[in-house]
Amino acid sequence: MSEKKQLRIATRNSGFIDPEEIDAYIAVGGYQAIGRCVTDLTPQQVIEEMTQSGLRGRGGAGFPTGVKWGFASKYEAETKYIVCNADEGDPGAFMDRAVLEGDPHSVIEGMMVAGYAIGAKHGAVYIRAEYPLAIRRLRKAIEQACSCGLLGKNILGSDFCFDIELKYGAGAFVCGEETALIRSIEGNRGEPYTKPPFPAQSGYWDQPTIVNNVETLANVPAIMMKGAEWFSGIGSPTAKGTKVFSLVGKICNVGLIEVPMGITLREVIFDIGGGCPEGKKFKAVQTGGPSGGVLTYKDLDAPIDYENLAARESIMGSGGMIVMDEDACMVAIAKFFLQFTMDESCGKCTPCRVGSKRLWELLDKITIGQATEDDLEILVTLAQTIKDTALCGLGQTMPNPILSTVRVFRDEYLAHIKEKRCPAGVCKQLLQYVILKDKCVGCTLCAKVCPVECISGQVKEVHVIDQSKCVKCGACMEKCKFDAIVTR
Image (tube, rainbow, N blue to C red; front, side):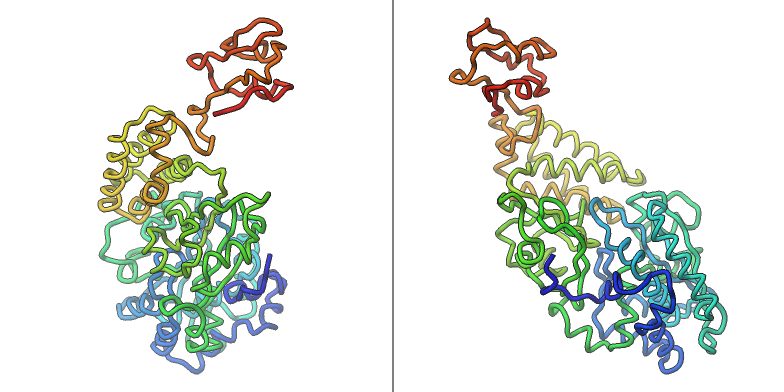
């Protein structure tokens, strides 16, 4: 994977230092940022530095981090909290996991700086239990920081006190939403609640709470040491710094990358990712995971930032990037992502709970060839309604894969509906197994293996498949030695 177009800030230490030794982190400048804060800067100056840096939340929403901290700092309360969102639930996403496994101290230090800025003494990391190595290294990092006097009472001889506890999630995608996350770490069912009040005013245990994701916090120490001007000089006019992406799917170089904001999709997919394997043509890329949308070759020269992706009906999300080649069926892709978000819905609001099921049923009708053009219009109308009425971000972004694929690949939807054909040959119910007359020698092997006896013909005569009985199992094609059976 090409390193030429990459720039590492959030992952600056991953792979370079021993993540289980605090001395290794200190040797590369670790904990100097919190030292600078408690000795040289007031909390307000820290907030101003973060605001001027232009750092925006890397968990998906892209809200300015310094502004968010500023809200919490204004509320008077005896207890305030910093919560690290490490509940990474997108299919194909592993950005937070990589940072926590490779450089846990940077996240701890980022939480400390945030705590100093807003007046919080307590922190909590909400991490999915499926990340055992990340949990072990994070727990060890916390213990080491405590033993060195970098966590706990009177940090570095100052009046600043801060402690961190770990809270484990059970893999609920909805708990990536900050209010559902807060409910979960309080021991309640992970369901979002209506805002306002926002967590910055009333969050964990009804106290002012800042929720930042792993990547956001990992950037904080670097910004505090190198300055806001340095960080804001990287990226695009509206999105500063870098972004970590997990590059997966039909791509030659699968893995984790960190690139400056504003880089183009072409540079990411072809220069860094190496394009699609086996010489296949690039078809689309899904950004933002199951809550995002698809972008095509027409978007390859679009800069990657929050506004540009939103203008193309997609989102940055937490950084999942799934590449698809010419063999992908976009209707099946939309159905796959909808299946995931439907299963992950907490069920609290009707648009998400019921609407997702109705959307899936409509997509299923299309993929089995039973839908009409009216069903397609209902699909789009219902998707837009759910987008406008769902309670939280999960429901509001759930229809994105449908709306974007219908907009860009409407011809594929119409092929399924009008021609009862899947152009990519993916939707099994729309496949037809056909015996080629010029290749069939009448060996009868296909008829012998057919589980529903839908193939007829005499020995040494051309055989025929009864399409009304065929169950599309493919056993006949697998058994044929003469390549006489094809799908259409």
